[in-house]
Length: 523
Image (cartoon, rainbow, N blue to C red; front, side, top):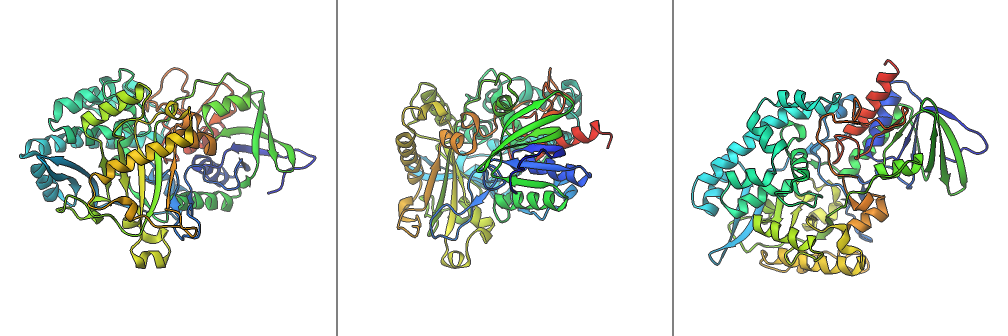
């Protein structure tokens, strides 16, 4: 769409940012008969939920940033008529370890009997498996009660507590550090670590952090879909945002890529949005503005004081392999081990040590990470020739690598961290990962790594934080408003991951911002 030259146009709603949440809001509002314009800075919509071909001359379309789906309500998919599907993973996780001088590990999935046997093989008895079952029965109950509230007006804390209806679960998840529950319920260090990892995804915290930010992270990782399952997007993450863009356009929304919003002026009832394109500046009027960007960027646009950014703490690595590597633990098939979440250096004590080292300003000596193979569950992201030859993808997400560690030299520290992270994986393989890596058209290994500083540069994530800020409790607090998307400007709403109940690929903030607009308009 070309810039609006020499005149202003007026829309019912202008949405700043064409990430998945902005597209959800656009589709809902346009389907309700409202005129909608989406201004997207980049040359494509999708934000962090995109699929790209990162390796020259290789027909592999990878989910470059966001990569799994859990928090997207089926309601949104149904309401918007999205042509989008997910597939469940048959294996939940595999965690390798060396015990008594021999390689072994814990495989969770493949049915109750296999999981029970895997626990017994690792721990020598039934206790840990029974504790596991009880713990995740509890989180499953909480998920069933909380997940449906995400697309409703914010409940109060007391209302949500009543809805959960389990005082022990409320205490464990909402009131005391998750580390206490992990240590009370599990004895095995590896099992403890597997449980704790869900509290540390993109969140730099100790298990006993008194702020409970690790609890909030854990909560959002176990409530998705009312089950806590993390599913594979068929066709890659870009399939979702492509479907959303189609739904928004089909409903009449205008999607303007290459249009960077630079200023929002509002009196609370009408707004003017100034944008910049390659051809110059323009402006457009709107009754409502929905900002699908970080709270920091919202403040820049409105001229308000920006909040302190929350620090990101992850390493994202995309790889293409000629074949999956063989494991030292010969009792596990690599096609199962990598189909779920493959935990590396994520024992409970290893996680604590890595956090302490990073907090002291050093890279962890044993960087923790988790890996999965998208193409085992969904081979459609690979060209037919690659599938026939047995090629596979690997996605790695590293923990406890806060942005501050990369300040001195992002490129050098990235290379150092990647090398040590892959060394931790190699320790559990029967062959070096490097021997399995594919090469691109220029003969370079098919591997790319992104640090928090890379994400800040490429996607304007403040501090490289994948949630835009620290995750919030899913209930009303002072200043959160009715839907958790309100700002101090009556007609400017925050519909990105930094909204209350934001974070992850969910579409929830986009849905809720649209509902807030339609509710005000009496629709």
